[in-house]
Length: 190
View 1: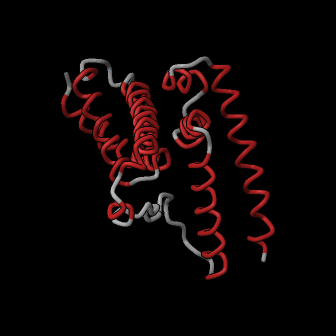
View 2: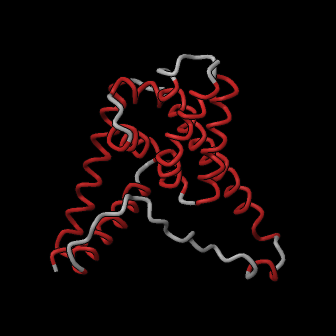
View 3: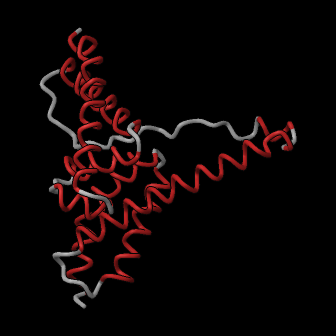
């Protein structure tokens, strides 16, 4: 096992993995936990594999962690809604359900001027929101293919599905994002 090579790989993938997890769960703390969990699993279970296998294994582990997070949240919401009426009235106001602050997830770009900078910021925020709103499998396929640059076979392996499913998920994601951006286009041109 080459510990230095594994550490280098994990350091190189950490930032992109956080962006993917952040878009997947929309919570900075949960995203950090998921990335750390994926890194630990890779180190514990697959450190003896060849370094060429690590990117696919890591993406598969991360995507499974995101799916598991969503499953846990779904179960938690079901229990909360089932037993929500049993909660004392004083507790209802103690935990507001606010969204986490939006993090700047995309690389900074040099602005030509204030108008272009504002338009770029609006587009980036809208795109991040649109990606986060995609169904989880479409989101995974889109991010792995177009953000991480994996090919269809690698994406299918990372997601644990067929290449045809990847193509379908990517097509639907791109179509939904295109429609979302087309809706935003008149606003950006103002």
